Amino acid sequence: MKTGIKKLLLLSFLFIGNGVFAQDLFGYESSLKYTDYLIQKGDYVSAELELNTMESTFGKSDTITLLKLKCFRLSGQKDASISIIKSIIQDSLTHHEYLVFDAMRTAIQFKTYQALPPLISHIQLTTQERERLYFFSFLLLNDTSNARIHLNNISDNDSTCSNLFNGLRNLPRLKTSTGVLLSIFPGAGAIYAKQKHAGLTNTAIVTLFSWLSYRGFTQKGTGSIYGWFYATGASVFYVSGIYSVPKNIRRYNHYIFSNYQDEVKHAFENTLIR
Image (cartoon, rainbow, N blue to C red; front, side, top):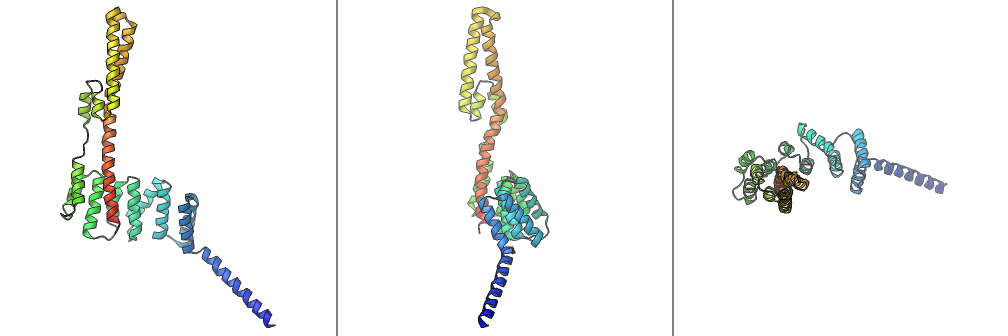
């Protein structure tokens, strides 16, 4: 009799224990861990579905929003990421700083720099940290006027900010007008646009074709097919050389500014790590 009662109690305990365990599997913390595991594994579709289910079950929270933002960022969903960033900016509620920090990193990754200033206003920072982040944001936006305003509020001992500001003003950018004027000489515009190989090639081809055209016309006159063929070739390469100069200058200036932005992003990230 006693043995039967003991067995019954043991079975009841196991049943209740399994019920609690099963309930925990679908609990908030367990769902968060499972979703984070899916994201780390790269299964972003399943992670997004799980996060949507969690929002329906438990309601919205900064932790769920953070995981959604992480999921969208890692899967390259720019529009979905920006949508979350906009909702954080427009929300009057105070969000945890780890969510706002991640929103900033996401904005930087997708080059949505205009979202940085309003995001900065959503977190508690020291005066110097706030001014530094505003300063870096306006540098990324290539807004020297607003950057200077915040630089004036930063400690004079901050050489990083001073160097970055001077670096933006002194970037070796090329002028399109200068490049086009130099293009009067075959290949010179491309060389100015830091396309030395393309410039020298253009110079060589235009020079060679011009000489072959001249030779054809001097031997057979203006009726020379040989002369007209190479004259047309020289004209095509000459005009195409001029046409490509503005594009090459824009590409070079973009390359220079992108490298500069990488330095600013690094300084921005170092300020976030506190």
